[in-house]
Image (cartoon, rainbow, N blue to C red; front, top):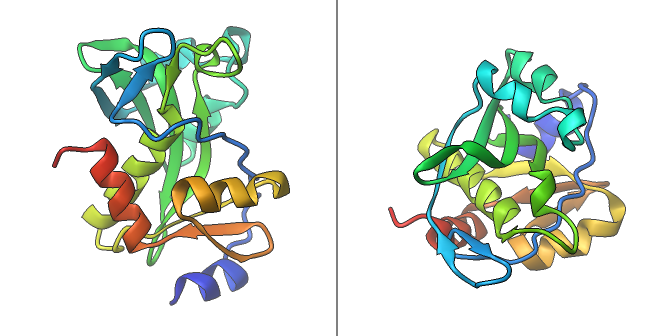
Length: 184
């Protein structure tokens, strides 16, 4: 079933309208004050990580709920060699012909004017694209965005506005993002 048809006719779950800002496409993540880049790792969020990603600790979303949903995979972004400090999270599902991005969030210390690292959201989106290629979907990912960010995602990620608030990233911009963030 083609992506558009699937999303219009089958997808009835609660839609999260994403409002992440792609601050900069970097080679990994970049320290705001020094400009130094740090290589990253992306791995599954573990139940033991949940105590770190709570609303009490400044996170906006209920990541326990995401982790408990059997149809979703939740990934964490960390700096290589420092797996205990989570830089950002993304929740994805495998659909018939693409990956769907439910939620994406930078760590509280990577948001706003006093953020520590640039490049967290771009890194997570690039990883979603990479997974899409690995799973045979040619890099296709889809997500819903808030209205005010439609043009931002088109310019920063190469996303396409499918209709309504649905965005997709297809093979060519997906490859560009992957090449930016991942060496292989």
